[in-house]
Image (cartoon, one colour):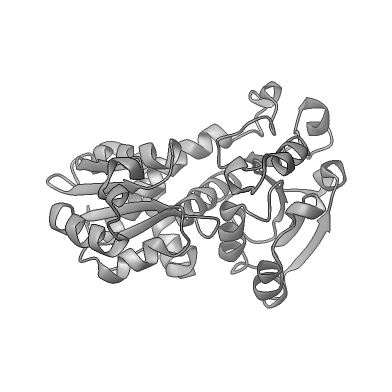
Length: 305
């Protein structure tokens, strides 16, 4: 039995197999329509989510399975003080696989240590978001065709952005990947990611404040929102939330084949006037999230089609 807690839980070869499976699901959806008939997925979401929760549910339903669970800790026994360990023990009696989002870092890992079913980390605090990373990787690989020799700009909240941290850890395993880290001083990438991941792996990177400075050299621009829920006070959030806004004018500085990704939801960091730009692929990225989660469910349940 396997779990997915970190984006590094799959090695490069296994990741290639997973992405190839996701591509086959995209091309041949009917082939997989009944692959999980009779299987049940529990979605245990202790903090709000739209895309992640619904994409997991859509993925399982597309495979012919069923879904049960909760979308708010207040509607679960967590409100009565039940531990994550006890919750997952009970859920293991009801479902075949569990996707868990939790505000506390490490909670899905604790769940995996007490579960008798596969556990998928659907985001834990500001720590990891491995299935968003799989979604990002599938988007890049499907639209660019490779991971090697890419210059990737990461823009916005690099301090609290778990999607950014997970993506960096996944991409450093490929050849000649370069990062441009675009953020204000207050939201810079944490030193433990910079030192333990980038520098330890001899990855080329630079830190800049102005988005305009980075745009001309990018293959991928990964935008993130400034997350109100990660700030300790409203004043700091208000001061930082409008620091970067990608609009039509700034897009004229970018290469014609650059891709704009965003884990969503966006607030105002990407202007709606670029939604029709062929380089803006964030809604396509959301669709890829369903395919990659379908592939992940099949892989962890060891279902072969």
